[in-house]
Length: 259
Ligand SMILES: Nc1ncnc2c1ncn2[C@@H]1O[C@H](COP(=O)(O)OP(=O)(O)OP(=O)(O)O)[C@@H](O)[C@H]1O
Image (cartoon, rainbow, N blue to C red):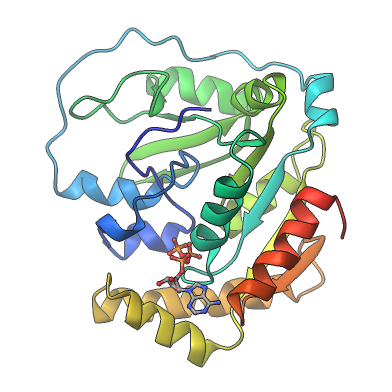
């Protein structure tokens, strides 16, 4: 599992749309699937012009037996629900048990970013071919660039004997759940106790503009509606009111394999 200091995070497309920069206090955890928060930085940092020779998987691979043995966990929930907080605790308590897959992107590498570490940097053609071949468990477009989690990248985590954690937003959740060949992961939805509390938490986090907070709250309503629509694949909904209780519940689901 590539645990680099940078937090390549994303949980919601709204994250990117809302132009929030990751704050140092949140840089605990590397999760390349949570890439859209980092994609915000696209606006602020110039692209490098480096051309990379990619080693990224560009052909789809069949899900392996390891993937069935180490069933991936999809965690989703509104921005501010506490996903990072809970995952950070989980990784601290179980440092060798979980992994984050490396995402593909068509954007250019920045700074010291290396192919196969922060991302697999691929051409648009290679990316779209992999989409066509159902090689992504989920993918999305942001700011003219494509981002995706490949079946191969998730397989790689399972091959290392780890459970892959996919921290993804609602549209990604739908894609994973409807993928034609990818074995069904286990879905955990983290819910704030109320919209009022969510708003307070987003405000106390003090990382967003007013506009961004309002966008997050609007998106949160959409996510909550979907989560309770009967259409969502969630196996477990944990309400993150008291953190300790929520953590124990989430842990029981993730580690104890319980619904
Ligand atoms: N149970 C809780 N009680 C009080 N505050 C909490 C609780 N859980 C999380 N928080 C706080 O709420 C804020 C949002 O949490 P966090 O950043 O983990 O959410 P997130 O779901 O990862 O959001 P995003 O998708 O935007 O990254 C943080 O400031 C965190 O410290």
